[in-house]
Image (cartoon, rainbow, N blue to C red; front, side, top):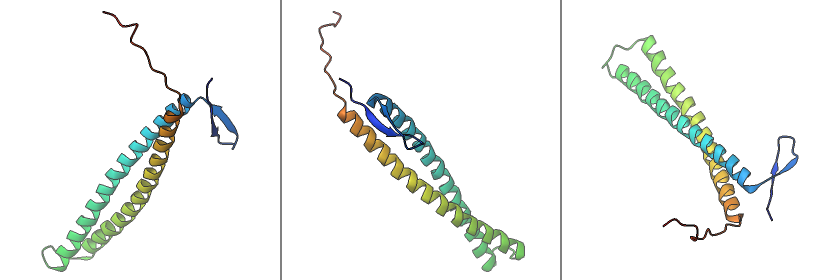
Length: 127
């Protein structure tokens, strides 16, 4: 006897899937979420670089290490503000993806645990 899992479709209609099909779907989703996390990590690094660069420009100009003018002030403020926005946006996206990833992995583990596995005997072995 096979067990089937109810999965909610886009139209809120329950469709019944074989647990193995649902596990395969979840594995694809887990892979996509992993790629999304990797992408957000790259943007978080870029945001931190922008923050540091903006800070270096600002403090370098204020302390006379570099020529300080309106263009440098605008560039440093743009880098700082852009870094803050990019960092905040990607941190929230990464947190959301982590939660979705944990939920998908837990669901997959539950489905794997619910499948009645059978042992394969060794009688068919070649000598």
